[in-house]
Structures are given as C-alpha cells and as structure tokens.
Length: 277
Image (cartoon, rainbow, N blue to C red; front, side, top):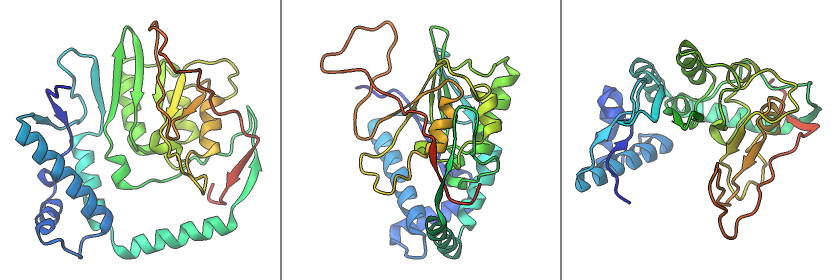
C-alpha cells in the first residue's frame, strides 16, 4: 500500500505544555501520566516513520478536504482543539484517582432498567474526556452515500460537527453508515444529539447501518452499552459489533468467499443502569 498523505494531529505544535511533555519523553519522565506519556510516544513514533518515508503530514481540522472532495473533516476546529489540549495538560493524578473511585462506586450501585422501542433511559448530559473530544470527525461521501466516522468524539464535539452539517442542509437520517463513537460508550451520545444525527426514536424500519468497534474480550460488558445500541436501533440504525471479527460493509459489490451475513444487536429490554443518568 502506498501512503500518499498522513492525517494526524500534532499536539506539541498547539500547546506549550504538550511541547514540554514531549521533551520529557526523552528522559522517560515519571512525572507524566501514563496515558499522556503513551499517547505522546505513539504520536511521536508515527510522525518519525512518516518523515522517514517522505510522507507529508496534514492535520485534520474543520474544513480539511481530500483532493477529490470525497473525504471531509467536520471537526474539531483548531481553536477547540487547543482548548481541549489545555484540559488534557492540566489533568492530574488526583483527578484520575477520583475517576477510578467513581467508576468503582458506580459498579457497586449498578442495576438494570427497562427499555423498549419508545422508552429510553440514555442520559442527556453525559461527559467524556477532553482527549476523546480531540478525535477527528470525518464524513466520507461516495456515490451520494454519506458515511460518518466519529472516532471517540463526545457530545460537545459531535454537536459542533452537526452544526457544520446542518448549515449545509443535512437532515436527520441522511447517513447510510455511521460509526458509533468510542466503542458504544453511553457517555458519548445523548438523545438530543442522536435526534439531530439519526432522527427521532420509535422507528421500526431500517434507515441506515451503524458499526461499533469493540474488543473481543470484554468481561465487564462495558462496551458497547446496551443503552447506546438501543438508542441507535430505535432510530433506524441497527448496530453491528466487531468483537475481534473482520466485518465488511458493502453496496453493489460481489460476494466475498467465507463471509456470511452479520447480525446486529437486538433491542435489549433490560439495560445497565449505574445511577448516573
């Protein structure tokens, strides 16, 4: 495969704090949080490979478009990205410990609640991390078909991308394919965001297809959230899960040997409820 261009964010170019953190990588600094250190190291390694191969790097901010106009970046904006970097740099070990404690408490208090095609218990005000919201949100448009890739983006980032789409005349349900954000986490989407993106709940007919990238081994059943897969399904977008299996979404293409039809997630009437909705 020939790589002609690499799209990746270069956080050290937008934040003095990130630039300092990157410098500290040379000393394997223990002062850096593990997650930040690993993320910066991975990005730095990728940048070095691209430079060694002579592959140009471009940052995927709002309004970046491929030369043929097929792929378009809907977010984040460069200004929003800088705001998020400031939050990432300021995040402390104390906050990480608090988050871990809150997760443990939620697991202890977790129960189940009832849902159906009309009853929805997905939270309206859930939050995700600043790091997740830095994800590039991309729209692929081929043969008048719209495919949306959301990465790990959360509610505010998706809302900004929807502002851009709606300004161009986008209507709920215009998507033929959508990637469920962040492995199907219940914290990345809300009823109002999904109404804008997919349409109102209570739809029994299929409108499009949704995919969620989830791990094969998932002992805590954390991803995907049944609240999330239900929310997509009741808006006409049944969710297919990867779970360690290669899946192929196609239109007007020949059959592939060894492949069979993928079964989407059903409507779950009993869903996890952690008390934070």
